[in-house]
Image (cartoon, rainbow, N blue to C red; front, side, top):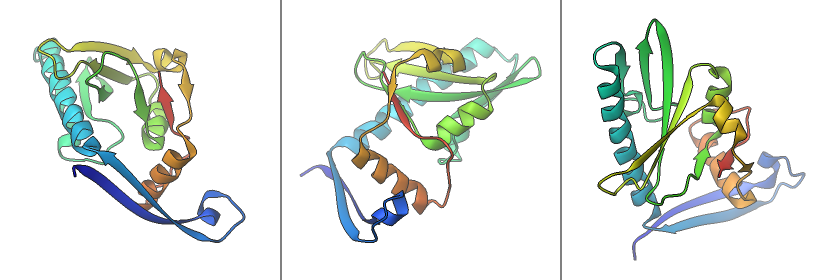
Length: 173
C-alpha cells in the first residue's frame, strides 16, 4: 500500500511518567520515509555543489553525512583556519519549516559561532530556493515542540541508537 511503518513497545516509566505499563505504538506514513530521505539527499547535494562553488578551492570541504549517517551535522568546511559546520534541511514546498533533533539542537548550542543551517525549499524544482541561517537567525524563528506522540517516537529512536540528548526537539516555522 506504500506505507512506511515503525512499531515500538514503550513504557511510560521510560518517559518520566510514574506508570510501568507497556503500550504498543505504530507510526505509519504514506510514502513518507522515502520522500523525506530523497528530499534530504537532494538538498544535501544542492548545498554541497553550492558550497564547493563558493569555496573555489579556498577551503577544505567534507560531506560528513555520506559516511556518518548519525552525525549531528551534514557537512563541514574550513575557511581562513575556522571550521564551519553545516546542517541541511530540504522540502518540496516553498515553506520554511524544519525539524531539529535533540542531537542537532545540542550540537548547534555547542557550536553557535560556526554553525550554519541551509534550508532548501522547492527542492525538486529546476530552481530550488536556498536560505542560510546562522544560530541567531534560528533562535528568532517561531518554534514549538512536536506533538507528544512524535516526541515519544523520536525518543525511542534515540534510545535504539544508545545516544542521550540534553535538549528537546523543536519544529521551526
